[in-house]
Image (tube, rainbow, N blue to C red; front, side, top):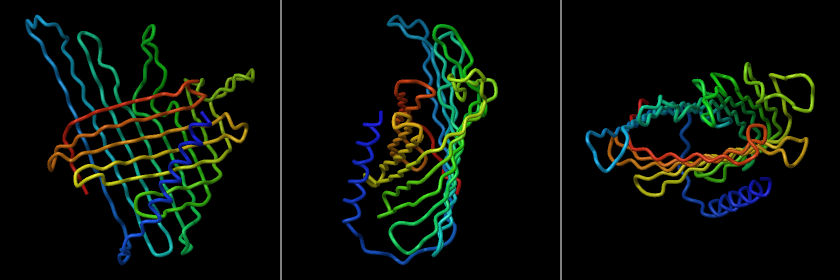
Length: 283
């Protein structure tokens, strides 16, 4: 997994250099708060009556809320963002199952030195809203609200060569907090069952956004945390979203997320979502 992280980092660094070489005409800076809150709602339903070709009744829905509050000043930048998602699906006579569930908060304070590289401090929190289940081979509860919850505090330096990409790298503490599902935080090498784990390492976060066309936007976020205990202990969260604004309120989106955390599962995890639904910008 460390090879994938290294290759990905090199690719993103190369992209940043290429974009940095293409320096557009600078505009006068606009300081102050810039706030955005966007909500999406998607719903799909299938129903069959005397349908001889076969098929099962099904439905699914998902709601997303993305918020960003950024205060950009001459000497500093304070960026706060929140991502909230929840959805369910049902096929046939089976009970409804969770299809999406995420709570993610991030706050980054950057002090501007007037150069390309600037120091920062940041804090993030990740968890979920509702109970999660594994259905193989039987229905088993595996997670719940803030069980587990992940917190990361980081300080280091950041680089923003242009409006498309920004990267930060620093030393970080990462905490895993659990209540009933201690397997996310427990150290199997000890006899005691731990419900809290604190790790110290290095964190790299790269945000990338690009306007593919007048109506299509790509947004990517690559987060890498490496525990100083060993180079093989690397957590990777790579989130990629293509959004197309079909009309003023109709939006199509494709999301591909790669997740690797050795403490959760020894293999890489993939999640893909294609959705069409209503989109509304609150502010």
